[in-house]
Length: 194
Ligand SMILES: *[C@@H]1O[C@H](CO)[C@@H](O)[C@H](O)[C@H]1NC(C)=O
Ligand SMILES: *[C@@H]1O[C@H](CO)[C@@H](O)[C@H](O)[C@H]1NC(C)=O
Image 1: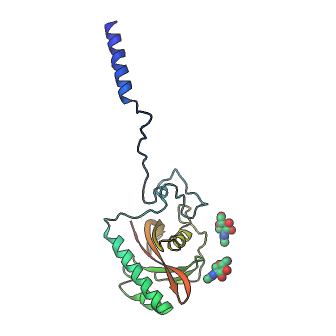
Image 2: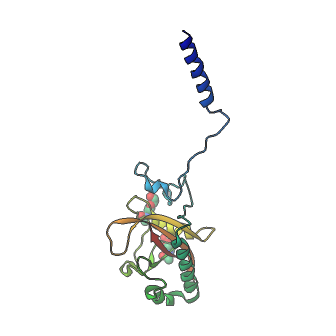
Image 3: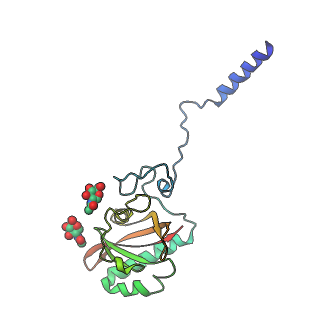
């Protein structure tokens, strides 16, 4: 009898102590960096060009990765060249080591998602990519254009895409920046694979 009462008393104390006060909000975990894309259980919202931006409308890569700053610098430098020289910048962007090395290359769309330039796959130039998706059903070409055609004028987008010379997709972070090439608005981009 005494033991039962004691157990009840302990139970009551523990229960009181562990019940979270109602007015205290528990912190909500919000995954960063395209969390939706990493999950098999949640499919991206196809009506949103950013693939379900409820969790994070502006994902960004790990700031400690040195490729983040390198990529931003490369894209801004390519943008300066394009704004300045127009399509005459294409040969430099295609072949100069500064813009084309290893898995690094520059590509350019107009605001309709038509590929104006792609240093890794020149055969794709002229193709329209509007509504085309990555292996997760994410309309990333449209997302890249929206990212650049935004108030900020430049943003990161992540999606899945094969490395040059590969078939399998890898996660890629691309920095997209708005440019004006000979009077026409476009988007210049480059990225790195995780
Ligand atoms: C983009 O699409 C719009 C609407 O379909 C069209 O009017 C415009 O000419 C297109 N622009 C380019 C550069 O293809
Ligand atoms: C792109 O997708 C939207 C939404 O699903 C659809 O309304 C539109 O017709 C599509 N456009 C093209 C060119 O496929």
